[in-house]
Amino acid sequence: MDNKKLFIPILLGTVRKGRESEKVAKFLFDKMSAHEEIETQLFDPQKMDLPMDDEGQGLKFKNPEYRNAIIRADGLVIISPEYNHGYPGSLKRALDIISAEYVHRSVGLVGVSAGGFGGTRAIEQLVGVVRELGLLAISTDLYFSKVGKMFDELGDPKDRSVDNRLDAFLVELIWVAKALRWGRDNLPSKYDDKLKQLQEEWEQKK
Image (tube, rainbow, N blue to C red):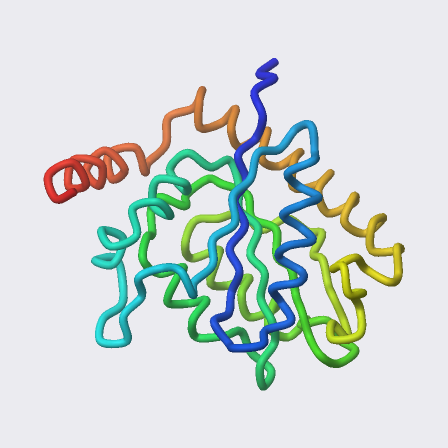
């Protein structure tokens, strides 16, 4: 069995000033970094090159660190706040800079809201998006309700029951990520030619 750590980056899904989701991202990053089976990296769209006058896969050449991380990744964690019953446009713009590079990787969805539903409506909408990108969403989501009151001044959750929910989330994410890693390493895929073509284009343009 492959004992190499799983590489599972985190994508924070909002650029809003004063975003409470950043506290969730830092909490997850710390927990995942300390996990013996996981290596992670946090991507913040505020720090990505996502100009308002362009979008789509051409922007991956402006964001090579994100593109290369997904190529290496075994999975992905997406943190999405819920704004007006939906996920932020900045999250969609970040996700859309690559496409086939996501294929056959697990994804765990994390919802955040100021109210009591934890971003469930945003996560429901994201399931269709990640499926179209070729990611496989795990069945265990993670929700942070009333996020503005959830963390203390040190960034720790006031209610430690979140630890049990996070453990269940990571157990499922790790299981699916391991299964898909084995599949990518051992089974042919209809996407192999497409990925080879994308790599050739990357080498030519980078």
